[in-house]
Length: 534
Image 1: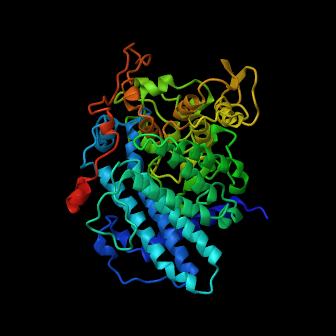
Image 2: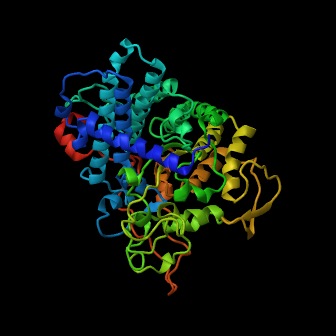
Image 3: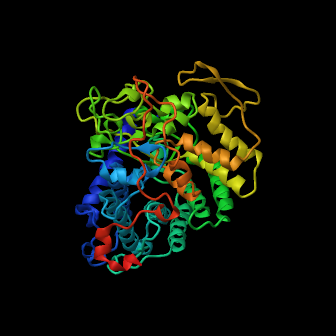
């Protein structure tokens, strides 16, 4: 029986609401997200039922949403050449990343550290409390699936931290060690790999409860979600600073398995790129892992709509997430550019700051309200999209010496959609590109590419495909391209009405060298445990 939108919404409300209740009832750390070891000094207790374990798992999803509710979760991404912020106001923490001068007292660093370690510590608690369930006459397959979600969420939390900090500890005990020392980066990556592989082995191809409610994408992790995140991990592993190039082949192999089994996971590209940012499509097949929000359940997202608008009249936005001028200038024309930026806004003649506006942040024209508490939305976060799996496969295949026809096709699917064309139909001779409304764009044509440097073509395609999605900085780091990208930010053609060439709002004032790729550990954490200085 096909379920209507009301039924789907009820399911999401229940899922989000249970996650919220689980945080309140199961975990002791939720009242203060600072992972103080004393909070965990409780007698060991085992779960007595699958329902208890499920509450623990829902609680972890709730903690992830708590971590991701503000831009704090993605603050390091302001270091990329795609995103900038306001030159004044309360945006100092974001400007530090934008200008490559991040201090250990940066509040976003500390918030992220505390939130993600809370997920890690509570994952350890859930795993510890679940150990006795094997002694009961219970559905062990269901227990395995739930534990798979725990391993996935712990691995994700470790990985998200590792993309910010080169040095960090790996805590796997129920009671956090207040004197824990840093692990090597290799040890951190091995632990993330172990968690994600454990998740992959336990998780189902698709979450049955989501499938029953016809919730598209993966708001709860499935086997494909774990493999997809593993492929991203291997791509990073092959780059700076570990540079284990053998991981390129593993990235390609893992991504290819997701591609080959996408039907069983419910994954695919959406037909229209711009539909990804419409509120009605916040659950879609392209998201291989979704951080879901729901206002009716009190689970609200503070990263979109008003946050991306200018603060001046008539917008009254929050001036937080803007696009870089040079990035906008260089962006290839076509329907994807139309869907990525709000080209209807005359940003070149704004009074307070002349910066392009991301449609990915504000939403398409008229899609989200601009009144009331419009800084709050129930837009979901697509933590990873199927488009990234395709581009990982293309890039990693080429970097591992396997430039196959399938790898070229993976790249071309993304390029075709960007040109407004059906992504599955090969284009062997030039055809007109279509705008986001399906109308031919004069002077713009498209044809598939089958020759050239596939690795670099795929790397560049990521730049445009994921603009404003908090991924570009990590790509620059792994390929050691930070200086190359950030030394080239000066506008070339953008002028105000008086004919004056615009300037970079937040010029670089920190190092662009390898020694400044990763952020320092939060000073407050180091003060508590000086062992983390080593």
